[in-house]
Amino acid sequence: MVRALSVFCAGACAVLLAACGTTHPLPPYETPLAHTQFQNVRTTAYTHTEADHVEYGNHNALGGILHAAAPASDTINPRTEESTEGGFRPVANVRPEPAPTIPAGGVGSAAADWSRWPAGTVFRVAATGQVYQVDDYGWALAGRNTIDLYQPTRAAMNVWGTRQVEIEILRWGDPAESLRMLRRHQEYRHIHRMVLELEGKPRAAAALD
Figure (cartoon, one colour):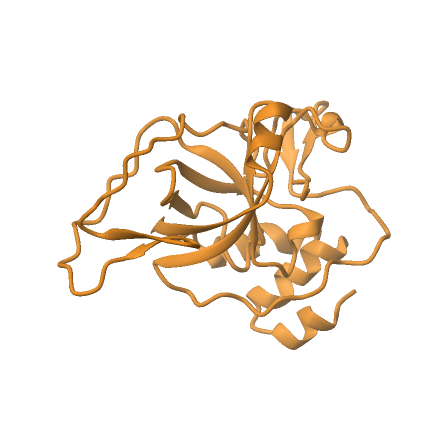
């Protein structure tokens, strides 16, 4: 499973946007998904007690604490969504509902390539109704159309496994702010790949290994 990699600097009491300087190759590059409100996305799961995450604690790359999403709900909006084999999709020729309100609590943490889903992006998983915010990233996510959903326990992580789901973007993060934060740590190849893509250099990002 994909692991989100964020670093907590205990001495400075701050989280740095960096990750371990691993030397294995970057994952194969994938063409980014269309920048649309509804997306069909591969999701994986991670938790802070995995062996490769213990040293970072339960902190995300933005300096906050990793949060689990509120429990899944079986309720979906029947006016705007219909069931499909791959999840849920907007129903054609139905007047769109007003933009959904982002809940004050119960928003989970998610890790992703910040050039595809900038830090601060908030989305809802259509099949469960759970809401997540991108506040982390990881080596195995750079250049990939995969979002890693934080789970509070290994059991919950294993239950989620890998799923192809429909998500609805409730709010896009700021790519300029993500680029500003990532540029300071692009000595790490996965971060450099995200920087290249945010700078509009997809060929260079794809060629990076």
